[in-house]
Length: 170
Image 1 (cartoon, rainbow, N blue to C red):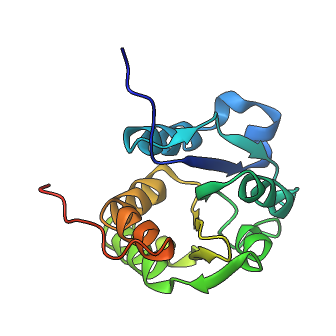
Image 2 (tube, rainbow, N blue to C red):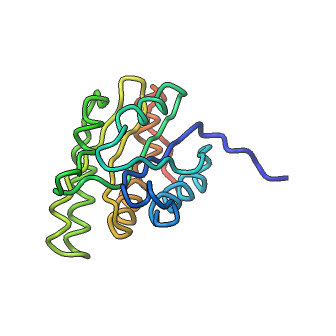
């Protein structure tokens, strides 16, 4: 018998006009969803919206059904339709800029200076959900998940009044 996830609900929102037209082109949403499942969150398949589409509404809907973590991927660059940070910034109550700073730092070391063009945001919503916007690249997502690995438990424990999360042996 497989254990049911116990950490609550999480959601992945893919912001990509190409993937909205053909979901098979989404190469980052499933990676994030699987990462969350491995951490015992209940996660549906990624929701795909086009660049400049109903990003705020989609994330808000996930918050309203009790998501503890919402991660977006895509739309954080500088093209005319990259507006994910603007779409979700108003939903963040407490900003956590160190998270996105570290993701960019790791990207700079790996992918080079184009990582500095990512305008991602991170923070906690009024309802205690960790909200993070990741780049749409596989490398940016890998960097983001590596940073979150050591933080997600601590952030959720803090925002839900549980004190400090226990340190893991890993």
